[in-house]
Length: 319
Image (cartoon, rainbow, N blue to C red; front, side, top):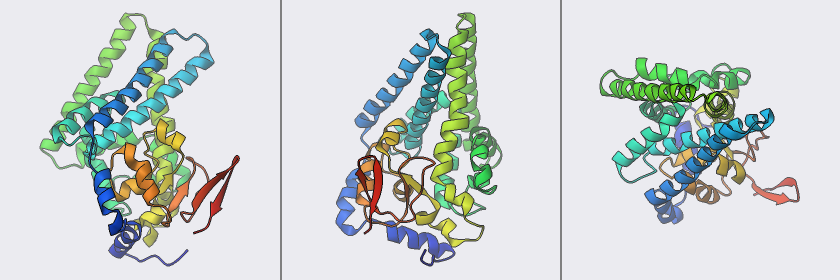
């Protein structure tokens, strides 16, 4: 691996190396423009898939089938998390109010307050690689062996951080208000299902999907996209370099399932690009050097080589 600049220079150097050329400026500007109608249409599809899964959880009888349905619902909850994440970046709608309220609506499904995620996630983008600034640093500091287990505590940890570390005042009041609303909604769902005798739906359509999200899908997605941070030693300048501290997952199937959050290097470079345009942004990155894997938890290439599918094998075409 070539030498990596240290200190603040490392971040600027990596961004300069990954930045699109002036020839792509107009295309990039187009990619960054939110299209609320497209977002709503795709959100409707993800929500319809979730609703279909809930309907199946109410009628399916075979235990294995119920387990698969609950896993599917957990995966859909992760996709909804990504959609509210776009609202937090204000890349879903041009209206700040629309981003706020639709993001809050989507956040209800996963319980975490929208303000909690948005405020801390902005700090993650601004301070990635800085131990004192990135709220995600705790997940990485235990090394790879603890990374995925710690990610299971993502939601409770972020809620606590948002109530203790964010500035007191309006932000914390919003967190408390959203947390109260979410608690009321989920308590009403639990009480309603119990009163209706829908214990099966409560377990397989509500409780287990949240468990799948917290302990499987979210750790795999969030953990893998920054796994290098858990492997790079403290003080290594590569921790501040997007070419080395972040992984892109290029599988289009994973992209469909999880709303393209796998295109993570691209997302960190241009967070205002909506999720449905990240594959197009990924294509513009062709030939640039950064870490890429075909699927989560798969082998990671140190350089971004052009990848060709030949039958069932994956080969590399060196630049």
